[in-house]
Image (cartoon, rainbow, N blue to C red):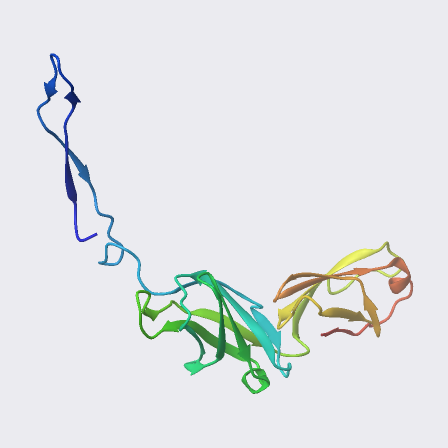
Length: 203
């Protein structure tokens, strides 16, 4: 829509004794977004997965959004990926293992070269994390021996859903909070004696 549209509204009553009323004006306002009356070009709402450990094998990236076309292409840091059109709201793309060989962030966009939805979407960020993850702090980082079971919070980076906490060489029940935090259940038996314990994470 190029601008506001004025519609003329009248009331008509058929004969006998009828007629047409005077005209009233009804205004349909145009809604402008970014200088255009209607959105154009593709837009990303989410990607799945959003991260993977460094050194992962080739995988399929699902890109969700709006205004995708059959000629839309998913780009990874400017490189075209082999893209399959699923629907106007979903694309899938093949991410080669070489693109996730090392930890780092990648810019993911959807580009449509021609047609009604021509343009480039906003950027989504895909994160390749350290395969092992990195611990920056523990909470608590000391506890009295002989105490009850407790929850150990592990802060760091590069964690994923399948990252586990290793406490004194044994894998512990681990809850994924975020890519920067894990929580592990430590039993009373684990702290029955006084000693220094090594804590690490494994993906």
